[in-house]
Image 1 (spheres, rainbow over the protein chains, first blue to last red):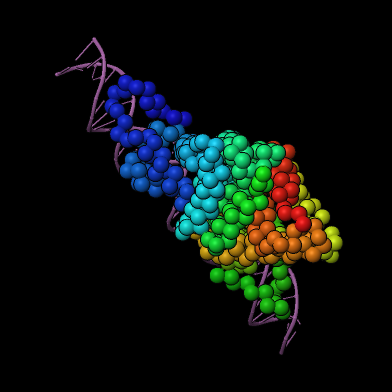
Image 2: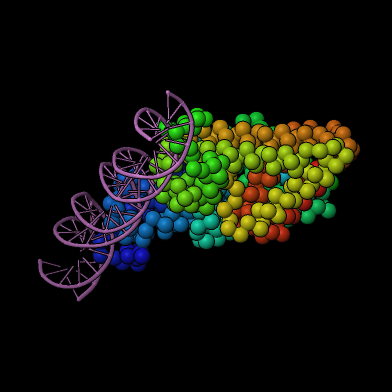
Length: 205
Length: 205
DNA sequence: CAAGTTCTTGACCATCCAGTCCAGAATGGG
DNA sequence: CCCATTCTGGACTGGATGGTCAAGAACTTG
């Protein structure tokens, strides 16, 4: 249970920023996975005592869930920034984003991949909350892609007869696939080629 | 270290089949992930004492690595069986396989996904042996798909001017993406639609 | 400034778990 | 039929780790 509610006016104030702690915690979970991450390490990395950590977040699982949520929200926000914009440049934004994901995955020397993928892979069979967050996140990204595709259609860069939702689903799967292949140290060239091919097969008007 | 070498004529013979034990171990790792799997549980599930397990496989990590190898080899073998055959039906086999993966992923009620994906996600940052096996496995599947695509091209079902390697890479990414999305409990319909769309965008002659 | 509240620290606890070890069982060779 | 060898089972150990707690620090309110 979370004990320290942080309801505004408190006696002794928090000595830390919750979001900052969550970012550090995210790094720890990211590096090793949920089960292998140690609460002591997270405490050390944040500079907090374990009591504060447990007081603020309840237990390891809830700490992870919070970090996971923040991370996923950030992901969606990043995709939104990358894809939002005027129809005229929608296709170019889509293209840039898909290639950027491939390049980012390829240059991830640590092979840690994305916490969304890692967390979902590790915990989907055991924690419904993780599944729910992952689903929401994927759905949000799917919609962002779909609306970017629709923009590209209006701009005449993608066949207007195609179903934007279907193309978005395909692109989302490709993105997640690139991420998965990247963790197996697939060559940067291969990943980029996959991204290019995905863009190339999109139906032109 | 592995102590029991099993070099043919031994004093007291093994009471178990190594492959069978690896299958059971695979199930355990699959259900919970590597870090969360307990050697005691694996021993219980196989009916072996821990002494025998450690004698035969060395330690938890090597046991996992062996199980992972066997699992991946089986995966490749399954794909080979699904995709090998005459050119005339190559496209149909490809189509059936892609749809089958989507359906299988969708009907995986336990959301455990594929051990290849799960193991790679969890351990790619920490165990080079896992990365190596994953890469080999993906490369093998990639080649199988490429050669099936080439067959479909010879049969006139796919544009002969397309690069089969590029299309194979794209399809592999889509398959891995479907797997990833499936763990987030994406609807069976969505997964199948992604598979259908991937097949639909393949360039026809 | 006293009282009341909440946060912080880190020692402490109870449990869990990978890996060890040994006494005994099963087998083949001599 | 006995001995050397190898496997088996499970009790045991040492260390790690999630979570608790109590004493004290920091702040608000009256």
